[in-house]
Length: 95
Image 1 (cartoon, rainbow, N blue to C red):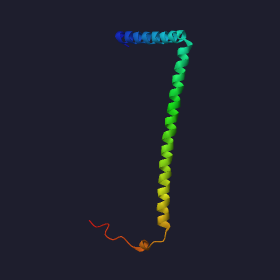
Image 2: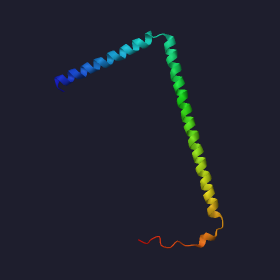
Image 3: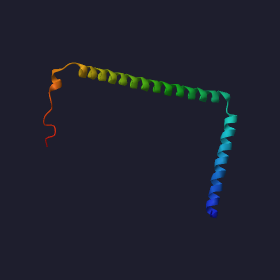
Image 4: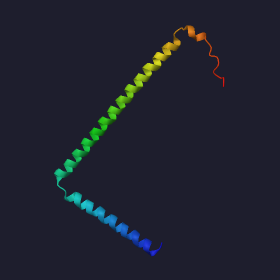
């Protein structure tokens, strides 16, 4: 490894470790009410996300139920005796 690359690497390492230590000190010095407030915000966001997921799943379930109903109707139509069952299609392969 060349000297400038090694110096840049060490510099980046020092910056990252100092930021990590600074963040730890900041969290330790923070007031408990701020920590609780952040936790409440996080839990509120999580609840909103859960509600969105549930709503999305309910919408998909509704769409699937509609598709099942349509397929059941088509199946019943296919099972019903029809006079059109014996008609053959002619001319589909003409080009």
